[in-house]
Length: 66
Image (cartoon, rainbow, N blue to C red; front, side, top):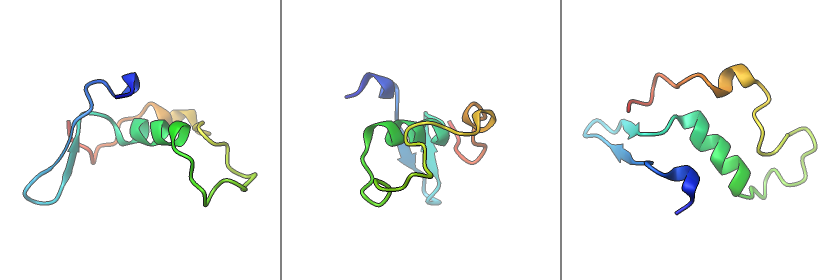
């Protein structure tokens, strides 16, 4: 397992709600850095692997419960 994902756990409760130990923005940043998306390969308007709005990068997502 990748060291960046240490402590990562994800579950779906009986109501279908996703519960995760990591913030969804952090998961998305990890995926952007490590997963090649063939739909986005040739796009020049996307800065792959970087969050363009730093104010959003550090804010926890209130919909994901820890």
